[in-house]
Image (cartoon, rainbow, N blue to C red; front, side, top):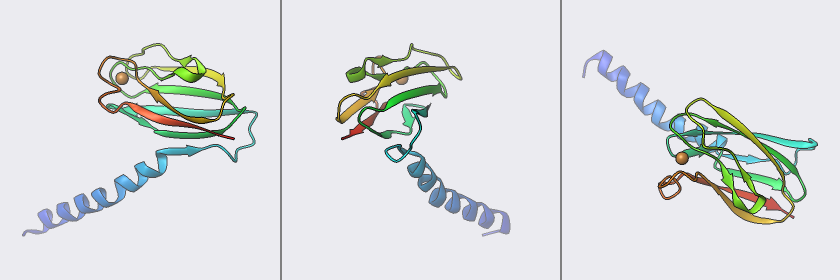
Length: 128
Ligand SMILES: [Cu+2]
């Protein structure tokens, strides 16, 4: 194995080791201990994945979600709180605001046909 190839193997191995841990940390936003008047969370998408894919807030919280579309045509929908952005294009963003007035575990998703089935959803958890 020559030196360049060896280096490449090391770099790839490091990337494989590090990247998933970074993503998994970003994948949950727990706002239950935030004392902001409005809980502002940015949700991005890459392919058919949302980041974060899990959001936790306290019941009664006023929540402002800004969805930033990383590519393709998508929206961000949370039926139980009548919250939905328009379907927007790549690098566009849209903000929705609502009050998380009931506790439970809900699912937000993309309403573009096939996307939710393809994995474009996440958990919105409202803690009592
Ligand atoms: Cu979508």
